[in-house]
Length: 160
Figure: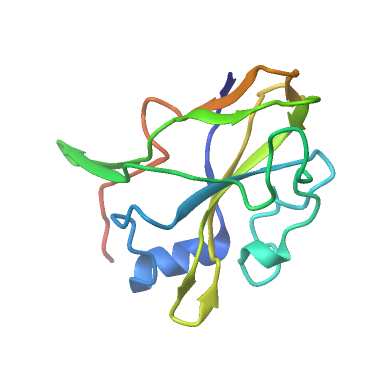
């Protein structure tokens, strides 16, 4: 099982969060995909901020399918002055079959079109803090546990 590292929000996603493009409560279209160490997915200003801009996703083989898996249960909680966004852990995520699944990073994106934006990216994280590749060998699960503190939080506001 991989423990998702600190999530980094893509530059375009910050705009999409602010202008209402993302509906974070919608459960049906969030997906998580796995990427290799040679990917550009950790570049927060990648291209136009869409899934199609990313390189070197794990190939369809050994139990992984390009495009990743759906993520359930988007949830907002509020405690004091902090609001937290969470998604369900990926357990089961993928099960290696006939070989190993190896990845370095995970990307969360919207699997659809929002305001003419096709598959906008939300955030990315390393699957190992070293950083190192994470591998699930044949017949073993490749599950991902998100941080118990949520994908991201929002707190406080200042005005000039």
